[in-house]
Amino acid sequence: MTTQDQSPIILWFRQDLRLADNPALNHAHASGRPIVPVYILDQGHAVRPIGGASLWWLDKSLRALSGAIAERGGRLILRRGDSEAELRRLIEETGATCVLMNRLFEPDAWARDADIAHSLQADDVEVKGFNGALLARPGSVVNGTGGPYKVFTPFMKALRAQAEPPPHTTGPRTFEKPSNLDSDAIDDWGLHPTKPDWSKGFLGEPGEAGATVALGRFASGALKSYAMDRDRPDREGTSRLSPHLHYGEISPWQVWRAVHDAASAGKVQAAQAEKLTSELIWRDFSAHLLHHFPTLPDTAFRPEYDAMEWRTDRAGFNAWKKGQTGYPIVDAGMRELWTTGIMHNRVRMIVASFLIKHLLIDWRKGEAWFWDTLVDADLGQNSQNWQWVAGSGADASPWFRIFNPVTQGEKFDPDGKYVKRWAPELANVPAKFVHAPWAAPAEVLRDAGVTLGKTYPRPLVDHAEARARALAALKAIKPSGEAFPDD
Ligand code: FAD
Image (cartoon, rainbow, N blue to C red; front, side, top):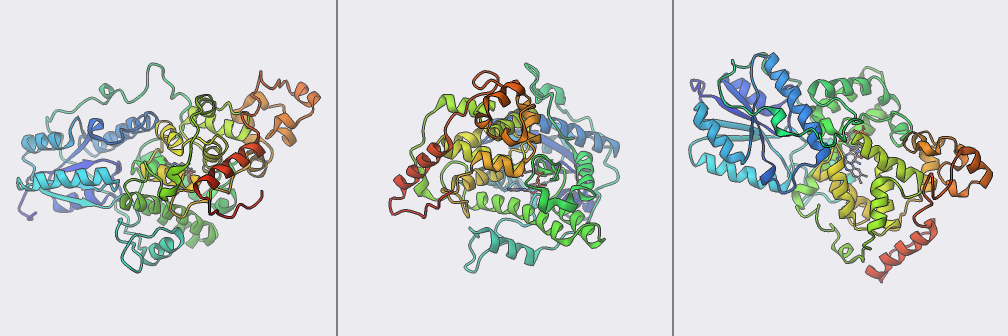
């Protein structure tokens, strides 16, 4: 790129749907050349097409980005089809000699971007990638032998030691006047469900402005008690930033800066900001693991776990998906997911553990269900977290740590507020029994209007039996044994 060169730059948006703190956009802007912003929907070539709930979010996020670019005088070009073919078409139509993008670090996307870059470079088109998605580029946080970390704490220490938040940037104040390039109408993409519209209860305000509002609200509110409240699904104790981060409507550095600024200004204790940034580092850890171990979504990170004899239990799997297991905290979580497209992290751990260990159903089935139903569905986060619960992942929770859904509910939703919100048929059950309605005396259930097996299901499995079965399943694949501590 020379300063005299005034040929346009194609700015290829993907999971970086923001104008502020966008490294590829900053680079394009600094060149002084016209910018052609484009988004290409390339579902046919995705190894894992985007799930339904996440497409709902993408629809709104693209409308928001399109509006923000229009406010600055420009136009987001929307194209659908093979990414390389569409980029080539745009290069032809605009005379662009450069394509800039923020990198995707998932292995398949990474390889595909490299192929596209080589192909375009062979035709004298400059192609450059930036990191706009993670705190650190995969490969830049390495252990003593230069390899990737497989344990979180040393990864976190190494990342913190090199962490340097980049300065805030706002992006160009104006974009060039819209050209008469073809652009699809987003309505024609049909990303919003219509037949039926299952998204009516979905939560969140997709787009950069919504992300900024969510971050501001969190930094001046829930951050104060984040370390204590983040495990409480009955409270608004977390940031709700995950779908915004997934689609790059906000960068992890923006979040990092906001929480540290709140701590520096004395508005929150430093420990709260540290806790939040350690969660951001988990996000990086998952993404780095997937980058270095591409089979993470499909095979056990600890291969011995692929010998596990999973049960084919269609009825159990369906009951789990519909929130009809008879364990209130599990059912509440699964219904929250279906209705809103999100689920609290603590409850994600509980429902995942229930599927894997109580029902002995393959974690990949749960991962696929989450992929389709979560608005924040993210290949690295989802597969890493499912494997973490299954005990088969890097630095995972051991298999023998089997969550008791009753005591988890009692601990993290002590008044049953969360359960009663998502399982309203239990609304009148006293808190003492709301996490185990089958243990309530008959008159208590009668007074609460609950008939087990009719108005609310009986438990699908007995906890003690399911626990024993799960431990036996582990013993079968690990005859030499791990320690099996009692409850
Ligand atoms: P906060 O507590 O406010 O945390 C701030 C940010 O830190 C989050 O937005 C997220 O980006 C990151 N973060 C927090 N917890 C985790 C974690 N455990 N692992 C990785 N990053 C984390 N998260 C996704 O973004 N996409 C997924 O597909 C996904 N699947 C999951 C599946 C299972 C089985 C489990 C147990 C967790 C999964 N998570 C996933 C992680 C976590 O549940 C969500 O990121 C979190 O609930 C988002 O809520 P929040 O933004 O309010 O988080």
